[in-house]
Length: 245
Ligand SMILES: [Zn+2]
Image 1 (cartoon, rainbow, N blue to C red):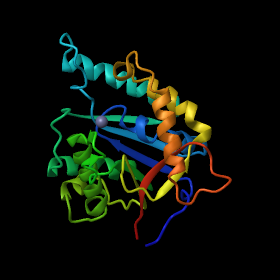
Image 2: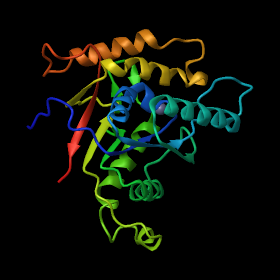
Image 3: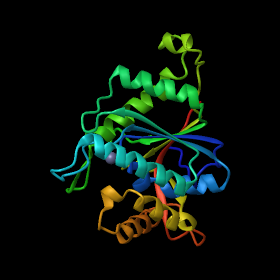
């Protein structure tokens, strides 16, 4: 097995695909902020707008989705993310079907990222207290299938060629919200930016301050890095990493 002890070079163009507004802020915003600081051009793609993420009986899905799109834009502004796209699939019923794969293939061919971040489709649960959201699995599965082989291959989805979208090969993939990490990114310098971006999701955090939980997670992630040494920072995010040939 090849281990990748530290994060690879800073990417130039990054596409991040999430199921819901706030998924990336919880898991990867420190890394995004770090890459943006180092000159990366980042595009976010949110498959749903999170229209089921409330237990307020007076809330409508339409209103909630509109609020959450504004919150996600605010989080992206904090992080310095250049572009934010919403695909407006319905929350909580996402399926990794060919329609979603085609749509994500289109986005990849338009954005032409060298690095793609998406959710780990293999993490069905974690420990004894967390069942992963099925939308996260569907988002991860469809994203990976779009990277390989659909975005790369001419004869898959010929309608995209007819739209003028040439094939595109993604070089590197980072899976977030993963239980099998093999790359750690030091986010000590961007931890406060991550927390500010997370707090932009006001409808989700409400009167709860996620600060202590996030600090504890990031500290635990840094401590779990098998390659840590004296220069390793206090906080980290971790990913399952692929460098595609
Ligand atoms: Zn989510």
